[in-house]
Length: 234
Length: 249
Image (tube, rainbow over all chains, first blue to last red; front, side):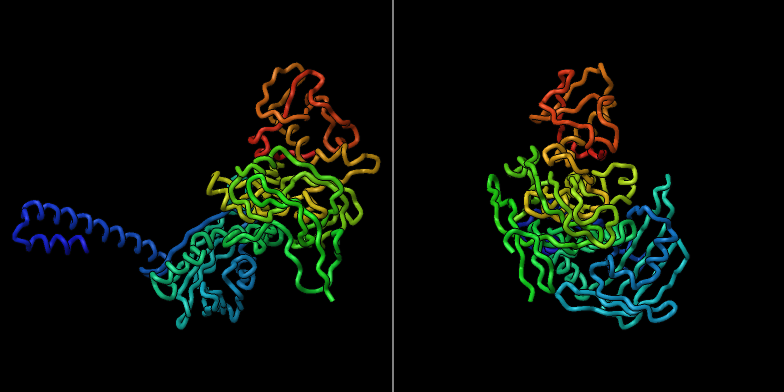
């Protein structure tokens, strides 16, 4: 836009070489057209789950469990906070309805009611937030039996419109919660829960997400309750 | 009233800067953890990469060490095959036992034991398993150059040692022996073969495959070795073999 404005001003100048300025303007207009077309195409991909303007994330992982087992676990949305680190709680409130509470980047929480709109046992679950949600969002998970007896390929799509629009997305990235990385970390934790029973933690990454600042790789002092002391300096 | 408890540990603070200092005791974090009171630990040649500042993703205060053994002093609720009082050697790679790679005995590729897998994936394309005391890219686990250590997935990663074998005879089962053994096994070495070895480390040897003790009996039949095998070949572990290491006696 700035380029076009400058070229427009140049055209108005009595010292301008008109044919050269016109050629430059045509080139810039052509590039602008390509930009607009690309932006439209990118926003059309988000139309798959939500309307244009939504942040769309697609991630997948392979898990050494059957589609039936994974579907059963995911279908009970109360299990989701066990591996989705941004969720504080999900309560099933009806046959297809649930109430979700999530952490927002700024330290507050956001809430919404959601409804399951597609439910194909052992194959797919799709849900979306209802009217009045703090953040419009939708999600879909697909379970596909993996070849070679490797278990299941799990494909997740998450779409949402963060508060603050584009600015909100930028802020979220600044605070270390890029949507694609968040979803991939969630899927890793889903795999850990299903294959080993719980999220794997380390001294450096106590919440097991691997996202955000690492602690030094040494034990954290306990703050509550009694415990035996092992060291020589008890 | 709760009192804090501390132990001594060897901590990394920068290039050629390691310090023995007091840190908190470890405690159980996952249900399959165990806490080991360490009776013997070693410095590995690979620790020199950390010491000389070649490994990224180190944090000040990281406890080093991935070759250690000792006595079990606490087990998590889902550890059934070892108990308090057992003497164990700990394998340096941490493996869950249930992912595709663990089930194929490729433990160094365990898909679940590295909570920071994304860091290694960005650098290498695929993440290795978590490893004790070897940077945050490989999990950020506290290491075994300390008085106590937490061993995740202790039902998989510990090897019970019977009475009668001193620590010095079995400690190398944590890393250097199985690493070299796995290299030999992958190359399918037979008596009479001529082999070439890259990445020699001092004081280590792997016998020809037919002379190697059978699985499960290594700790009874092995005796300390000098630096060369009877056939005059010197074998050892390279960085590549360590990363592909998966076999365990």
